Length: 311
Image 1 (cartoon, rainbow, N blue to C red):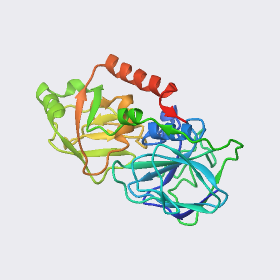
Image 2 (cartoon, helix red, strand yellow):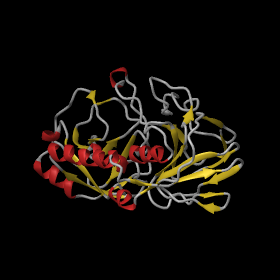
Image 3 (cartoon, one colour):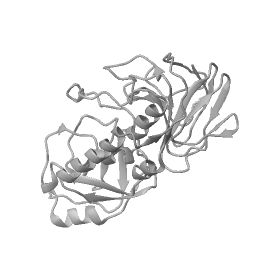
């Protein structure tokens, strides 16, 4: 089990989400940085979609009364196990009674704590992911609190020391340029607006969360006098509301929206959106659909190979 001594700022149980329920109004949720979750689970011998803890900006303190095999992935949160520093991207063995402490992030927004066997919580619509706004999934549909106790799925697997190779970590690292394809209402925006969108720098606003990242920068004007009917929206869609400040829809997004969408973040860069913090700066780069598919194939081929991890 895991005893929560300090919960951190916003720590939730997440897996890879519940796909396919958008028509019912249920967002996918899941890890904001799915690549870090997948790699963390593979480090401890789990399937890639096993439930883990996602910490945001400030980590927690957790005790393992019976010990555990664990791994930390994502952003650097200054972790130590009983005052001994813990490296990211490597499996560790916590002895019974040891305590893992994490501090404030030193790089991106989120860090993942994966444990061998995975966290044992009740699934909703096939997923353990927490959706806080609706109070569904995870541990009672909410972030962790002090005193919570999380069960770990029993396993007979033994500890194996595994590490993600540095070049893989570098290839998946934080980017200040998000690659996008054109959105379904791209033609609502004149050429001047599109040039502005792709040449401007934007800053992530403080109001950003797992529903969406609000950006601050040059306002993007659209052709006046047009209104659209509310329609389904996709993960990573970049909406332009009346004020002209872009919003990137994210994992806890609403499933429909009525603002025009100028672009969509490609699948290969979604994990990078999950590591953006308030006040981070970013730009957009347009790529063609075939390039987006190629980049995703390359990423998946790397993750499927045996070259990404050493023992």
